[in-house]
Length: 259
Image 1 (spheres, rainbow, N blue to C red):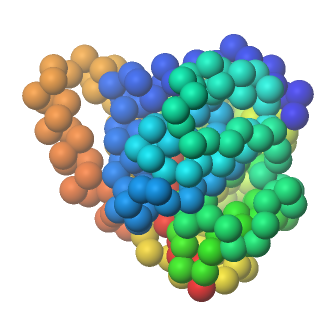
Image 2: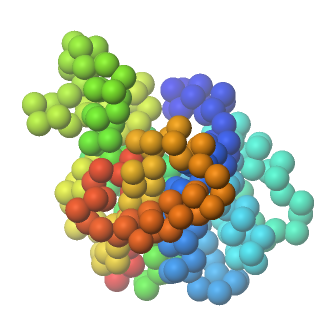
């Protein structure tokens, strides 16, 4: 937790999602939230709500939102955004233990950050199981992941970090990133996400690339004029469900329905 606390105390998550390239991830995630979320007032849980980029917006649409966040720093920023009109409950909590919440409570549960930081398969299964438990039968769980191959391509090779990560034994023989809590982010492949899904009572609707090729070309995307950027977003949304491309996206969104 100390590693996360230090990282997020100085990281501008809202700023990332408001940048040109960050908007692609937000626009895509927002689209699929609304594809599967019923009209207000639905009951929504966001686990790992961060500074409230999604929770606050959903509450202002009229949904009943519960925002669970681990870090006090992020909770403070989230609460500063509220004007008192939102139907939102903000709680400090951990994705691995949602025992304060009852079974089958929420129409939709969002895990848009915790899976980025959970290093072991057991932790990931626990977080996903807890999210499924508190979601009503027929409700939806949307879980976001950081993908392995973009990290190898950009961090290891583009940033010329191969020798360093090799010396630190941060790669397996088949080029899978090995993460510890101090590394902050845990990388997965599509087959690992499928294995997590198989361990809980859900049916997958889609596995979506939330930023696709965007983060490979950040400078180009950020320099686009409005019309070109709108066409880039249109291209991305037209291709983000293509399974031959999903594993190459920096971030993915797994859309599950509780059985």
